[in-house]
Image 1 (cartoon, one colour):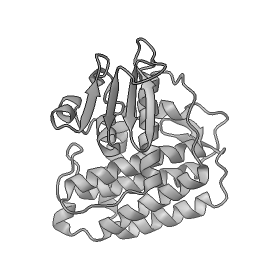
Image 2 (spheres, rainbow, N blue to C red):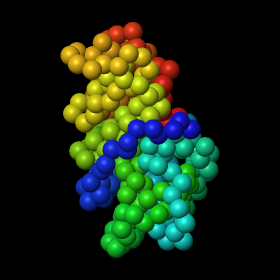
Image 3 (tube, rainbow, N blue to C red):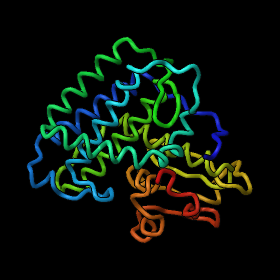
Image 4 (cartoon, rainbow, N blue to C red):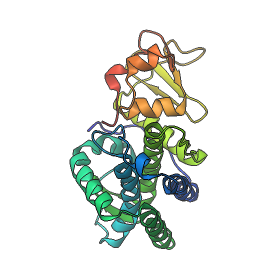
Length: 265
């Protein structure tokens, strides 16, 4: 796991809580309208169906409530920038839990309703400093909620890709937080100042070892849009394909990020 050497970006806790609830609501509204044929479609996550992917979204959000029910750990173990690199080890267990959840809850809207109610109830009096014993390690509630924006935005994109015309909207604050966390994770994984990565309008980071840029136009620049960046960072899109499709612009000898992607497998 790469060390997070750079200072972690701060997030407004109230806005993050609102963003998590808003994006979960966006997904619920879309899932409610899906028919049996659409739910049986394959998702782009291994052998998951859309039904299993939709169930997984509730699992990702319910983890907040479940961890608030558990005893508070003695100390934090995971910083926010460590989280993207710590998720792969838990993938198999999460996949098994997702399949079981989908089988146990044929009424997805009822599952979404219960999950949303639990989240609202548990967050009502929980301070952001409260430690949670998460799957990946103990971390604060405030930090964990930022990671939920990544789960929600990434899987919103997965659902939109699996069901043509679904077009679930993205809460702006959720999209911004997801983009920024993954951009900062790149800077932590590939520390340096030779390359500037721009993801307008949400993030600009310096990364990659080499001569540090100080003024004027940076010699190495990568620029893309938020969803393309998120797909690159999470392995949904290959660097070479993004360049071929002109979804990324990269100039300079140190602008090739393929060695550092994906951040989350």
